[in-house]
Image (cartoon, rainbow, N blue to C red; front, top):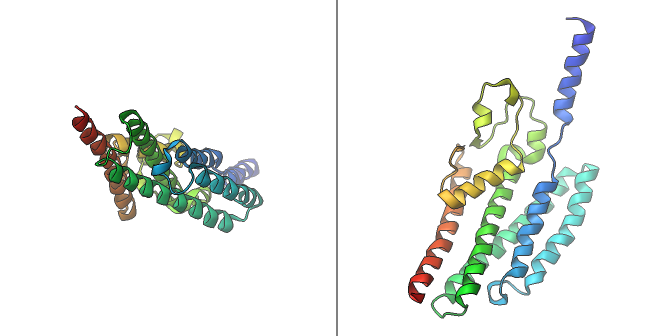
Length: 223
């Protein structure tokens, strides 16, 4: 092989290893998910509605700093803490919503708004979990030299088209899977391969279904 071609190949490999997936869409989704609870009625929140957003904003500062400086283990741990807090808040708010429906704590408009906000949070939270856990997380996918060993069979991963050579899923792809799971109760065009992903998608579908059933039951009661 000519030296020029060899240098180009080595440069291409180095570029594929050092190319990093942008983190800002996931960070923005995390802040959005926490901000949703500020818009919820106080009876549906654990503590003041602004508290979770404040905690996540505080956590985001060291998350961004450690990610920028390359302390990825610290970033990973702090991200898991933030996601766990948002997930607990989501489950607690859903429980409060279920408890409040028989006693008619909320007016119909408020109930509809609360259910919609929780549904949106459900999509964002599970998209973040998929993004963080799949194929070693964003860092693991960044350093994958071959086809990504994803728990989800994205159409691009099974495509032979040269345009998708070296393709790796990013946050928007996981958001698309989470959105479809909450709306169609299935990942649609993306097959779920691993057991942990199957359990996660079942849990997400269950939460989405519970929200829709609660709305239907309240609507029937109103009529």
